[in-house]
Image (cartoon, rainbow, N blue to C red; front, side, top):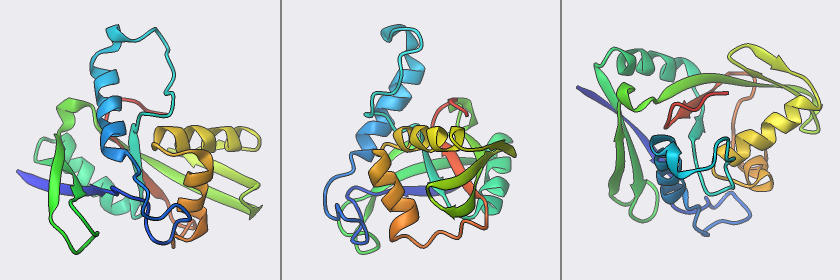
Length: 178
């Protein structure tokens, strides 16, 4: 079986204003998986209170689409890992191994700029969201990605080099979808 790896950041990257501070992504992902597997423990419709990470957002949607075709057919799995120290200069430790049976999934995300971050449209699986719904969706994306909106905005629109002309991949760790 093929294994595709996603590495979660243990700390904010040096390009982020909070660089070096813990992200809590490992714990937030575990909380989201637990919440989805044990809904009886929670009140019906209980929202994410900021301590859950239901997904990660990555560049290269087309690559992830091909990988998820293999995951959905049972030919591959997703290994979620975390660096033990400095990224790319330390070992990785696996924190979860997820398959199609775990409800993981993929959605296509695209930001369509209209001058600035304050004016943009969002498309998830080709469903277009215009302002102000687009901004509300961005806040929900941030929370479900395990970040405050300010940290998420800085991560994606600040110092990182994402090409927003190309679609991004929302890689879900649970059966949650937008």
